[in-house]
Length: 296
DNA sequence: TCACGTCAAGCAGAT
DNA sequence: ATCTGCTTGACGTGA
Image (cartoon, rainbow, N blue to C red; front, side, top):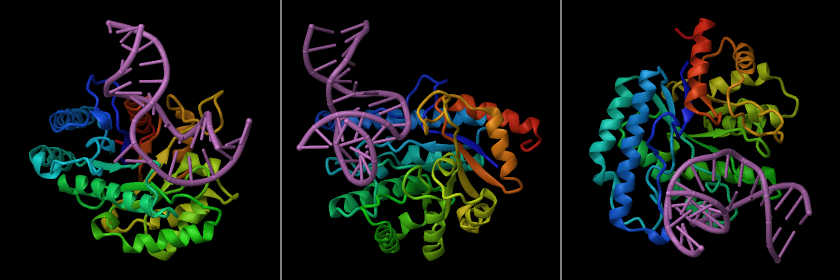
């Protein structure tokens, strides 16, 4: 079991998320920014190593405009040395990383242009992880997508398009149950047809379910991950008190976290903490699991 | 230097 | 038809 957090580290001064506006795009500037982002990523991974954090979500913004037609540098080649260095660091320290493209990535979109752009963006994520020379246990997670007034057809479209994806994307792509549209039962249904692994989002499960039991769905989720995929990935968050239902917590609620851990025993999986204070909660969670003798 | 409107991209639901 | 949340940081213009 590895514990991780997404994209940013507030304890460090650097940002791995620097970007630039499209209208200000120029080659020199974007190279500087990518350099900054990659250096910062390595700095974060080093921080993580020092705090025994072995799971991390890499920001989709690491290479700004990577899949945009304006991108005129061969970034894979240009930053080859950095990629190899970062990849080595991840492998040498037995870390796992993942990526999570944002809400514009919809392979089941009814709009052809959105579908095409989504594939390009997924390709960027896949090439990024391939450039680090990481095996396919390092995943790219997306939601199933839009509903477009017909869920069955939209699931069918997802399946058909998934089957057609290039192998470099397919080998890394995993789906996550979301808070509004595609619940865990939908994900299990899709997994049964195409075998795509399922990221189980515990917070979304609590927000969006049809009354199914956690214990009934857990075996399906765990088994959706094959040997080459690594162990399952779970996303964890809890409700921020006093905020609108569905708002992610600012800091970890250790009691709720412990309850989640107890409810999911004895399964083993890696946990991405989607909590706003990032590394602080990850450190707390790890310490807590050590106290419970779940981590050593 | 600072504040604040805006940023490549979609969808769904509310107004 | 238009706005807002998702989820949040960071850019960069204008004062």
